[in-house]
Image (cartoon, rainbow, N blue to C red; front, side, top):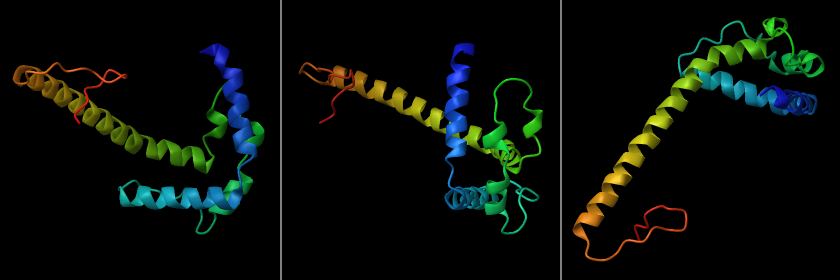
Length: 133
């Protein structure tokens, strides 16, 4: 929503300004390794050993804004890496949602089975879930 944009922008800018370069570099290096293992090409985002330098040199903390075009960030290696990793993230997210959907369907069938085979009354927990213990 448009009314949330100023708050979101301030929050993201604060987080970018408070980034600790060695820690962020370790996280990015881990993300790069994970991406490579998943088959995502990470070639050309950072020079060898240049992740810490890229974190320190990133213009995002000073220039970040949700207003206007985001084209100014297209050359930032972190934005490029994010764009390359997004399809993998979306696939993992969607697979997780599918598993949760399957779990919910099986739980509903379990409840139906228990109702059909039990002589006792079944009471839901306070959160509305079926207690299995």
